[in-house]
Length: 419
Image (tube, rainbow, N blue to C red):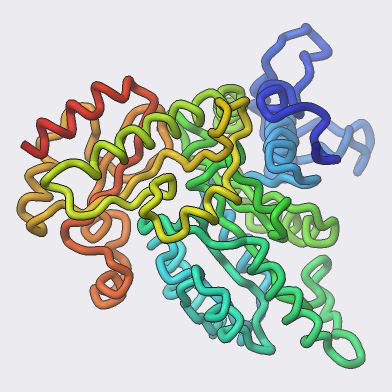
């Protein structure tokens, strides 16, 4: 059991970072709707609470909770997953190089390609299922290796421990002679000296995968998805074990100010309490639906890490572990996301998407209700058409976020839509 986790995962979901309110005994963490805090003397305030952008007690509880779920020492939450990504990218300087998953989320690509273009950052996109390709992409100025596993939407599984070994070899080669120059920017004064491995764990959630334990320097989440779990909030998170890195990240979190409201923090704390039981049902339902889709005559291909046909199935079995007590032999869990290709291209795919009833045609994922979407038109439209084609994001590709309804009803819904 991790040194950062006093209890098992399901217990930490409900209790980590949270204690009954000392004033009233309320079992739920209060929503501290305040923008500022009274000081007893100029500059004298309680436990670091001077202004709500910097610190809020509801947010403090949430950050402690999420850190425990990812087996980390430091958790930081943000107003969106892209705000969390922005915080990491603000650690870079002009000319720094990033190695990026080839099928990274379209919004992540857009932030690098459009928003941070003024920093003249260099970006290399590679198929990260190949460790050799990653190692070949590393340069002396590489400062971040950014991966998603499972990736979006092709559900590639990337070997986090294997990538960390590559990053460590690069760090050993890139130690600057004579140290680095501090340019007087507080925690950001010194540039990053070694590459950081950042793992976007959104598709797996902490319930079935823990990137820090596999070697990542930072685990990142769009909390809008499985951590929020109820399609009613937008948020993001970063978790790290590195004290110096946490100080740099927290400096930007406060200075830029893209933090969630106290109410959103309260809603996330409500949601993490059921993360372990929700993820168990997501995984069970997705496995049942993936196996059913493989037998359907109108489906050309099914992509799901739990299927033996998935090219990284063995790695998924090794890397993605259920936090709940599973049945004998069921020692892996593969998430609630499925991609599949409908035969015939765009027209039959569009008809199928227009006919579903229980599956709602909408972007996002990870909620208790099932969603379905068309990556080429919806979530990955910001990728150039040639890039989508190279990744296999075809006109017939559909992405399913399998919810926690009865799997039999979800299968019946898909069956009617495909008929």
